Length: 171
Image (cartoon, rainbow, N blue to C red):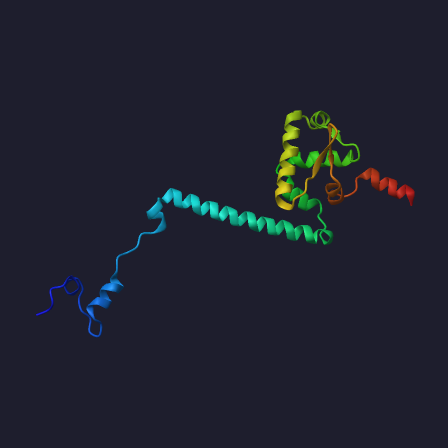
C-alpha cells in the first residue's frame, strides 16, 4: 500500500520519476505583474517606461543630426512634409520668403491670406513646434513684431525671385 502523504495522492507517479520531483514541476501558477498591481497601473507604468526610452532615442537622434548637420542639406519638400499640415502653412512660408529680410506683421499676413491674425500666429507656432520636435530647428522667428523666415528655412526653401534677379544683375 502506498504512503498516504499529500504528495503521493495528489500526483500520479510516472515511472522513472519520484513523486516529490513531479510535484515541484507542477507547482502553483504565479500571478503576473498586472494581476499583482492592477492592470491599469501596470499599463501606466509600462507606458512611462516606453516614453522614457523614446525620449532617450529622440535625444540620440538629435545628437547625431546635430553632428551630421554640416553634411545634410534640407530642401523645400522636406520642410513642406514636416512643417506644413495645411495649404495655409505653405502660403505663409511663401509670403515670408518673398518678404525675407524684414518679414511681415501677422496682421499683414492675415490680410493677404484672408484670415485672422491669431490664426496666422497659431499656424506659425504649430509649424515651429513640429520642426523643432523633428530636427531641433525653427522655421519662422520673430524679428521685433514681425515674423520672418530663419536662415535655415530660407536656405532650405531656396532663394526668392528678387535675390535671383539681383544675382543676375550683379553678374
